[in-house]
Image 1 (cartoon, rainbow, N blue to C red):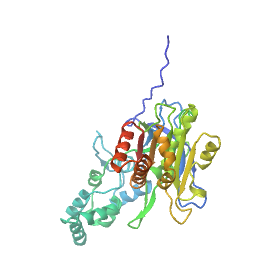
Image 2: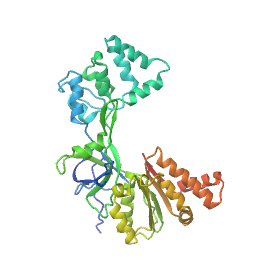
Image 3: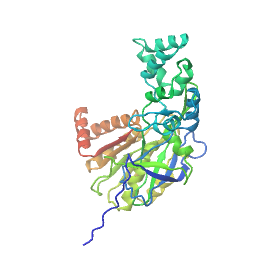
Length: 388
């Protein structure tokens, strides 16, 4: 008897698929201070498969303007050969700066090199102050506000060669984005929810390498995007009858859009509850029309919203959790799985604190017992986090 096997994909992190972009749509409405994109990547016919909860790895290139400026500051042409680790043959400086090397996050090592090479007294004094014992905090702040281009501009007396600069730069790593679609519903496509990073520091505009590559520089259906699937431990419960509670403010909502699509497509019996937050409901309710429709169709049990700037006192997802404490506890007692996706620095910590509080209060436990309960939830994969 012939047994059909799933298509094997030869595409990996080391051998990415050259995909194309099908759609690039702004999710925020007019008047928003934010820019969040819904991107659709075409993987049809590639054999590349994914499970909801997985991420898409994307290899971006650096901004051409930035590469040009660095080449100019080195007084180079861009054709100079440079040797890079892991490569057996040299590549041109332009190629290295465009697609092989990261141009941000300078380290102390470059300051050491500049100090050793500069012939300028003023530059030498400034670098000596930054490298002095006890200057760690000053140095960290200085480097944190700069990229390598700033250092080439500020210390022209050092006159680095293309190879000397290349030796200081780390490899340009792929960026991972939570997949925002179910392949059951969208075969041959991967949806992403991406907020392009743009800000200013040290008097210069900065651009997130991969987020602005996808949002601004990829021409639909034309620019190749090297991609691969990164499997994740973040995923739906094995038992489709289990209820799920999803906390995903901002772009953290991405995997939960995929979760719900998959649950509906596979007719999972468990209930779905989403906590979503952003700045303003009118302009920043990401996929709002979809959530409203699913709620109306009874495919979402609850959608609790926290729009921080729509009233005088800021309201966040953890505040909505506290308001729904009794209901959350009832779901937990029934075996619900709790998920958090998004900002690791503040949101995930605040949600974790609220969760402990709710369990202690509703379960009549002291803090230590509540902490044990949460520990057990994590062990049982009933508390999963995808934070960054």
